[in-house]
Image 1 (cartoon, rainbow, N blue to C red):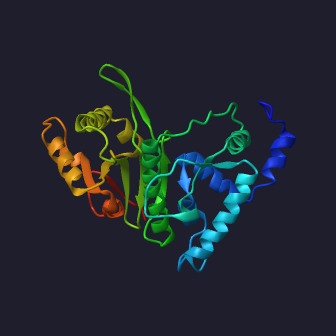
Image 2: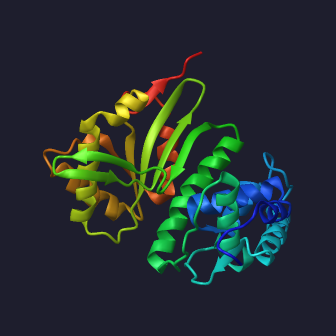
Image 3: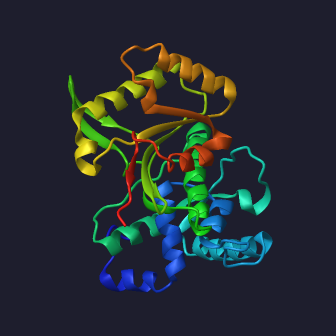
Length: 283
């Protein structure tokens, strides 16, 4: 395969994709890795609000499509396994392969290509946990519980800014704007797996405070987003809350902390009146 594709090659490869195929490739590009189950929930939803009657039926169809995309080298498996309750084909983890990545770039008129590096087990676990938050929000939107106005993953959600000692970049895991018929909530999401030392987490909290003080985000949207930290368990949540409260220059009201199992409840909770992170929706 040459370093550049001519227009006829791009058209030939594009013709192999359905609209849903392309959306799958775009989601793999956006989230960097997804399991078969994530892709099934995003693009082959099952149940009363979905396209398919049952999850097994939806999973079989998802597998069929993913195997076809794999055969065309648009996507590839990540052989490194991440532990979890899901087993079998639904637990396979996928990433965008070279042909898929180059095709999306070509369709957008972007030059170059990205070199793929096999992720570490910890990086992959963090990536999939972050994707889970986005997939769960998508399911809530499908049920009519909320609208997703923005959902940006890394690095699209990063915020460069001028700090006291030079250029800094705030690097949330996700940025989301969700809404109901009354309010919209802006939230930066941080997925903490309990592997970082608390001083490192506090340093990132300080970066949020520094970014807030620039006023850049407020000028963009009129408010500064809430910062939601999700943690693996109650003990970690308690330690993080205590660490933030111990820092006198950190506004504890800026940060919301919850266990990973309660992430969706915490996010939808921001849609209740809370002047720090929501805006009235114009009628």
